[in-house]
Amino acid sequence: MARWYPILIWLGLLGLCAAYLQGGLNKLLDYPGAVAEAAHFGLPLPPLVAAATIALELIASLLVLTGRLRWLGALALCAFTLAATFIANRYWSLPPGQERFMMANAFYEHLGLAGAFLVVFAWDHARER
Image 1: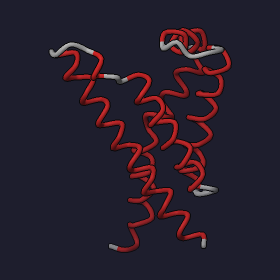
Image 2 (image 1 turned 90 degrees about the horizontal axis):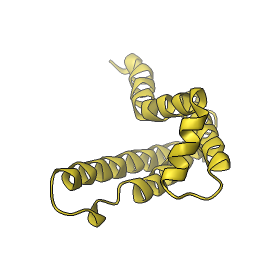
Image 3 (image 1 turned 90 degrees about the vertical axis):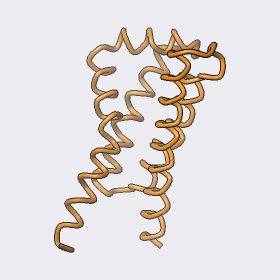
Image 4 (image 1 turned 180 degrees about the vertical axis):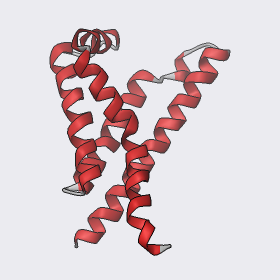
């Protein structure tokens, strides 16, 4: 069974990075849509934010998947996820109801992703020492 661990770990990391790879590629292929999304959330300099988001999602995911500076990629995706979660999923500002319920679920799911990236950061950073 131990011989399968590297494959299982890589598949787990791929699953963890899947949303960021998909999001980064979608934003890259629809850059005007990515700029519109940044503007929708009131972020400054939407074209620059969109470009930085694309670069971060794709490059950090590749760092995690290749194992090269995995800890750095994981830390970057953790920080990005926390920031995006508090910007895009402010469920507490919505009135009670289905929309608030769905946004609260998304908020806590994203906290889980950030936590998983924090574990990958700690695991990989400890291995490098």
